[in-house]
Length: 300
Image (cartoon, rainbow, N blue to C red):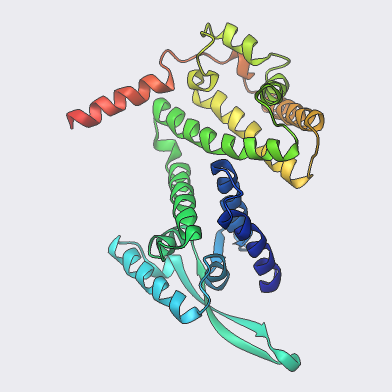
C-alpha cells in the first residue's frame, strides 16, 4: 500500500469516527483495521511499523512535529530499561518525486512497543491518539502474555485467554453485524452455528447441560484453557473470514461460522486432541478466580 492509498483509506475511516457514526464496537474494529493495515512483516516473521506511515495514521502533518513525539517515546523506552535500538530502528527510504526524480528520507522501523510509547506521548486532543493508546496497550499486553505463556499456571492461562475472547468477540460482533446479523435472536443463531461446528452439533444450551450450568451462566467462564483456546481460534478465524470474503446475509454468515468451527474441530482431531465437549469443566469459574485475585491484591 503506497502513501496515497493509505491516506485515502484513513480519511474514509476517520471521517466516520469523527462524525460519531461508529459505536464502541465499531471503533474497536476501526482501530484494528487502521493500525493493522500498515503493519509490516520482515523476512524473519517479525512485525514492525514505519514511522512515516504511523505519522499519517496519527494525523501529524509535518514530520518534524511527529519526530518530537518519537524523541519522547525513545526517552520513555530508555527509562523503562529497554534497548532503544531494538524498538526504533533507523532506516532510509526512497520516495518518488515529480519529473521521475527520487529522494531519500529518514524513517524508523518501529516495534509494537515503540508504537505504544509513541501514542502514549502523542497529542491527547486527537481522537485517533486515544484510540491508538487503547489499541496498542491491549495488543502490547497480549504479546507479553504470548511471550510468557508457558510460565503461566492453569488459572492464569484461563484468565489471559478469556480476556482475549472478550476483545475478539467485540470484533466478531462487528463483523457479523456488517454481514447482516442484526437482532439479538440473529446473533444467538449465529453463535450457535459456531458452537455446532466446533462441538459436533451441540448448541450453547446443550453445552451448558453437559457442564451442568445454570441458564444465566456464561459458557466461556467455565472452560479450561485448552477449550478456551479452541473457541478463541474459532472466533478470530470467523471474524477474519467474514471480512476477507465480504460475506453478506445472515444465513451465509451462520454457515461461515459453522464451517470455521467444524474446521477447528477437524484440526483438533487430526492432531489427536480431545474434543472440546469432552474436556473437563473447571471447578472455579473465571469470575471466581477474578474475585479471589482481587481479594489477594487488597491484602497486599
